[in-house]
Length: 200
Image (cartoon, rainbow, N blue to C red; front, side, top):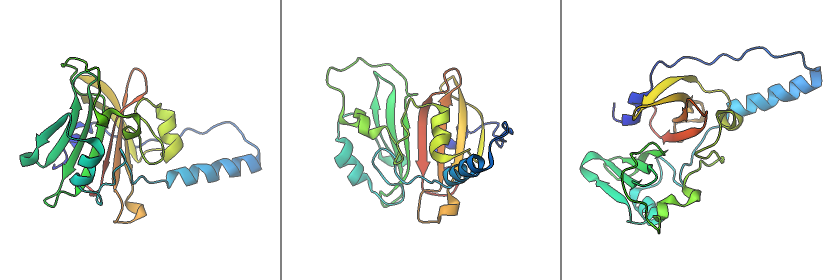
């Protein structure tokens, strides 16, 4: 597949909600309405960028050249901090329009820590349009977007992870179509988010 992050989608299964205790009618109706609304929340923004609309030039202006890894021949650009393991990776089409964005803390921590971190490490770049951040809990993910279309175990860089996969094709073809959230199995905390424009 074009998008390398999809190879970590392993053993995916549908999530089934277990029935809960009895709840008064009005409260149950309000709760169901809230859950239905959450299930129909899509995402269009990650790291301040819009897949399918924004270009690499916009990202370059936002993140600055420092820490930029040139992958021009491979169709991607990446800002990497070898101290923290944080990366922002963009996949581009032939016109340099961003096709997918990945923010992650799963990079190798091999470098020396700098006293002056790169601009891309600013906290405003590590969040979705709805406010989901790296380090948030799995419950917070479902609070924003509802139950995932599918979920299951995954592995990346030798770490055991839990995958939450969302499809947004119901929102129309002009918006990002899929979002993948990876959480650490031991802590349940978000360690990586990918938002992609194509419907893979």
